[in-house]
Length: 170
Image (tube, rainbow, N blue to C red; front, side, top):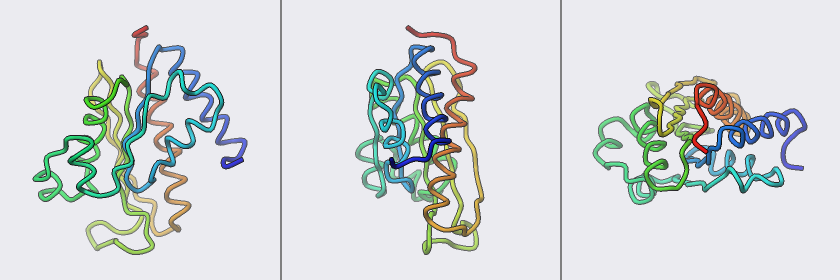
């Protein structure tokens, strides 16, 4: 098993809540490299609520797959609130999902700067009938695996929070 039992319970809760709300989920991931989508699809039967995952590790992938204006990346940097928001909104536009989560960050061990140190993560959640939500997290340099794991858990919390305000679209 890739994920511990506590994480599986959280994943199942996200999937059940999406199912109850008639929602399809898509992910747009950079620093997690598909970990969120892998976690969601690790549960049998998830195909009725997981629509697709975009792994957009490079800036080119963000522009080509999600339609992000490259000037936005140049202006704010790939690890920014603006790009996180654009990623999940791009996933919404370029999929059949009606709920998306995105993540961009610096998992390390290198790549950080004074302005954006290792452990800086931006997440966003978008849905058809709600404003896009954003979280900026600073985990610190706690190790690549731990940053990615905590980011995944934060994404699940954001999805659940977004769905708690959703009405059924089924």
